[in-house]
Amino acid sequence: MLLPCLVPSISLRNVYLKPMNTPHDPASMSDPNLPGPPAGNPPGDGDGIGIDIVTQTRVRTKKPSLYRVLLLNDDYTPMEFVVYILERYFNRSREQATRIMLHVHQKGVGLCGVYTYEVAETKVAQVLDLAKRHEHPLQCVMEKED
Ligand code: TYC
Image 1 (tube, protein in one colour):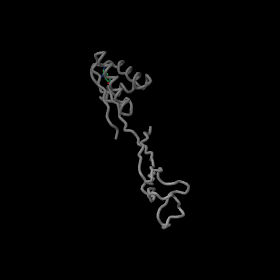
Image 2: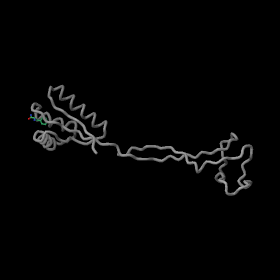
Image 3: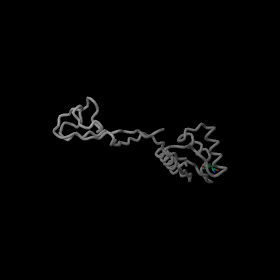
């Protein structure tokens, strides 16, 4: 996913001054080397100051940081509960969920999924909340990807 980031900037190349109280006539300009207004587009907004500021808007896209959501092993949470967590909150099939649960059981930690900050934060909170309500000590954490 790409986040659009609007960056307004003023292009000074396109700023020029019009002599005050002088009707605009490009042909009457004494120095042809001075920058002038675009043809058919009189400078200023009619208040006699005669400054046109042209703004350019650049669209910059920046990839959001991603976060791994990890499950930690413990000796008390039932295996079936962990499988259920992986199916419900991490959209895993029963086979995938069982494989991840067994990996955590054997290695101590395992990857549930990778998400943007708010999504990862929500999933961690949901897992911890359900575990707490069932009085299981299951731990779930998130860590930033490099
Ligand atoms: N080790 C637990 C048991 O033997 C099962 C378990 C797996 C617990 C994964 C937590 O994240 C976990 N009942």
